[in-house]
Image 1 (cartoon, helix red, strand yellow):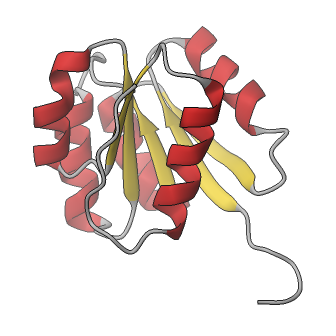
Image 2 (cartoon, helix red, strand yellow; image 1 turned 90 degrees about the vertical axis):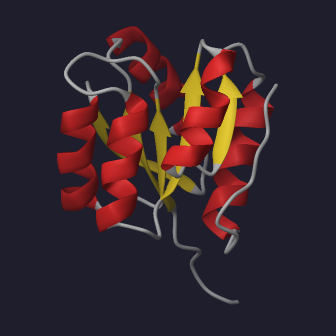
Length: 134
C-alpha cells in the first residue's frame, strides 16, 4: 500500500452536544480519522448514515426519538458494511447492542486509547462482530 492513506470516516451520534464535541476534539487531531457528521438522535443517525456513508459510527444507547439499538438495526439493514461502535454510560446494553448489529462496545469512562483502537480495528476489520468493553 503506497501513497496517501484514506481516512476513516466517522459519524458521531449522541443527544448530548458536549459529548459529541468532546469526541470530535479527540478524533480530529488523528491523521487517519475524519469526523464527517453528527446526529442528535437515532432517527437523525439513520438519515445521516445513509447520506454520508461512514466507515464507523459512534452510537449512544439512550436518545430521544429513537434509541441507539433501533437505529443500529435500521442502519445495518441498509448499510450492512458500516461498523457501529456503541459508546455509552450504560454497561448493561451490551447484549442488545451486539444483537442489533453493533461490532464494538465501550463505556464512556474508557480511555482515549481504547476508543481510538476500537475505531481503527473496526475500520480495518472484515469480521462482523468484535466485542470489547472497558
